[in-house]
Length: 100
Length: 100
Image (cartoon, rainbow over all chains, first blue to last red; front, side):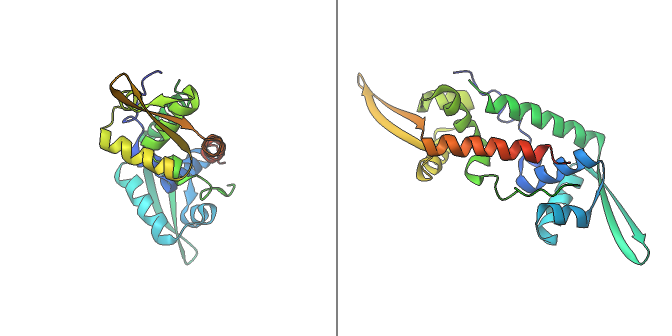
């Protein structure tokens, strides 16, 4: 059986379910607003906010706040660092689940 | 953006890193003994034991204890339920990370 060399390399920031779903959405769509993410993931405001803050603090997402008419809108985009981290995560994950 | 319908469907029992690595090894090898798993994953006895117990309690792995000469050996195999859960996890994960 081959050694699983990369268990530590599986980025904990991205591996958490909600954050993985957020990053997947952002990678696919380029930018997504808070309400769309909330709707897509079916999570609470608080839960989503918590995980978006973690992603922001690690420099994986950029946040833009603006008003659309009188309504505030917060939009998230993946940073180059976030894109690289996501792609690396997928590579490590694929190698892990194929471990022989 | 498509809804991420299956966030809850991503099995928490398997999603945890060490358990994911264990299940990946078992799926690939059919059966693996404790020391080989420990060596492959680079985790402590206690950490590995904890996660193997969770997998056993969920019916995902079978445990066989025997002596090889004077040395005890504990071997783990994936159950049919564990195999099905792993395959389902991979399917849900693949759909999630391709979310558009």
